[in-house]
Length: 436
Image (cartoon, rainbow, N blue to C red; front, side):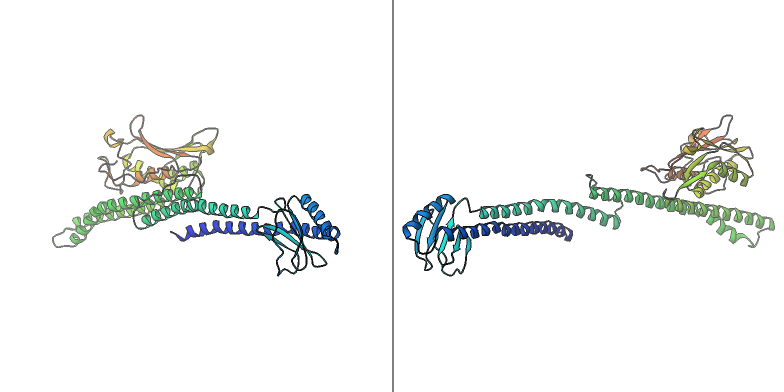
């Protein structure tokens, strides 16, 4: 059993010990009234049984005394000789007693008079049930101790199971989850662990898939670069061919640079939370990015809560995608609120181009990482749309595609006014083979 179990159980037993100590103190205080009664009886006996009176008179008075008490009464000489007795039989005074005293079993009170005589009294109306009360308290303490055992064991057993799942997760079992039943703090802790474990598992799975895809996709430009560096300046290679190889090298370097930049964006996005999100003016952001790409933005004031750097990356990827696939045709950017009267409640970013559009068979795969469609150029790493969609989802929104009226493509990013990423937020899709 764990140390925590013993801490809980011993704490409960400590409460029992304190309870028992307080009860004992109350027992001690409970004897105080009987001591006062004994002093009162002694004072009365001094008056009722004066020294030197005839024994016959003493017997009459002791009988009346016992009847009044409802129990027993006895008068003894200083030497312990019984002078008079009436009512219930009572024990003799203890020979070693030097003053008045009280006994419990049976309950009696022995009052020593001024002339050395003893008055012994007792009876059921005077004897409190101390023995029965003590046994009851002991039984109660035993019941509490027995009942506390399963309670303490139940609490600590749940913590032990949670600890085992956390250790399993730390050992590499990313599918390990804790039982989060109930509504207490332990259930809340288990739920928090499960939520964190799910997020970590998604991040690890995303990183693994990304690393595997990146290693596969980056082999081609690296292989071309290796061949080009071997051919440049080689015997038999013409100056024109050298220029072509240098141009190819430049394109491959640019492609690798773009791929690394996108990979860094993915890594940052995986670690991005919504705790530091702030209001973002999407119309201003769209105008800046459109001007940077040589175009213009239109629309109305619109706002969402999010990370401006990530949203800028989303918009930049969509504009780059439109420029790349518009084949010189026009493209446009527009920002608009979800509700015209409440621009702070969310917005919509729309990027359109008048290019050839996306074949219907490819529309389900254009947001997959490292995939390119038949209309794609050799430029780009195949991550732009995948990252753009992931940014939208991290902000609790969505990025979708629809054909543009009159031909071309239309990408719509819907962003809520308050970013609350869904609990089942998916990482980037498993790489496919075709993307725009």
